[in-house]
Length: 495
Image (cartoon, rainbow, N blue to C red; front, side, top):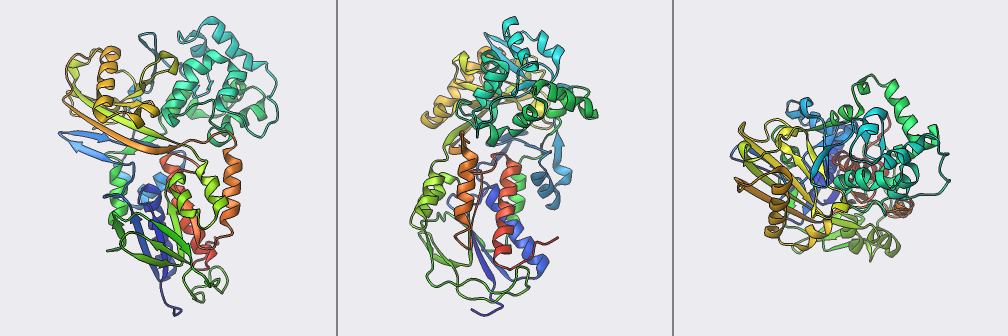
């Protein structure tokens, strides 16, 4: 091919990671005036992946994530670059608290409690969620020595040794399930919540570390819980606005829907690109990869697989069996959201918070429920309420949508005092959508990234390696775009 032939990148997967990747590829090429050809392949009939928003009768219903955190800047920055700054809204500051369901009651999570550990002493000491014995055991964190130096440990092990089994069972486990929908006995502390390990290493006591951080943070002096809730933001018209805007920015014909990747092959004889990284027009040789779908075969200079690790593994097995085997060991769980709308008068609970979580020890199918119309503005008409429930991953994977809705209606009816039928219901099930980072995950990531360096023009994006939240997935896509262009010498990323 000639020197001015566009550099061809195939991105597989048009979820938010793949769309962010495509947007970054196009932005970099435009900034450097480098010819670029982009092909974005998506197996389903729509882009956006698990992000789906249904706007019906004045309700804004999210079928996947409904918000993201602003302290990880990548999603927020992307929204602003796309002209969505006016769409960004935060949580309603009047109701910044949540509840734990325990023995038929919704009990407020103590102010300042941060997922695994208490950050304020008086609210924790007075909470009815724990027994006196449980509180005294948690207070032992103040005098316990640092834990043993081990490569990794589970979240459950960490909470149990610092704060005791009762804190794990009644607070940490349900709160973690609301994020990961996974077993804390298996989840890696270093891969999911490294901040708490760092607090232990630096301050010895996690509680003392949180108290000292709070003392240095003016924003946290009104309550750590309030400060944490203030980090959650969304888009007024729903998160699909983001993926719709990204899709609309793609060049005509670059997005192929219903185009699942069936085969990935390295092309024999493809030589390295000559020229230094950042050279405006590197010497072009032959494409490196062939990507096959049911309808076409594409030759590409680089391929970015923005897919779940469990979907990437079979594609890479003919290319690199060891790499494929590593990716295949990343476990994935299902997720289901069931949204129900009611007249406000039909819900007896005051809904004076953002929602509640349910400990596994309560033996219910319900994992958590978000009071969506309380948490964010304009989710429902003024005289209506919108509730968003989450179910156990195993139940979400195995049951029919009608069964899931029935479970949620029955359980919410008892917990929130609802006797009327919902005005509308929406069930959205995502199979094998939630990556779960087991103990030892970061070692797996290190091995994956080392093996990837052996395959020029190949990169991964998505939630399989370094973060499951929306900002993490955006960053993974942007980083993959930067990596393949920089390694090829198509653009310079030097600052």
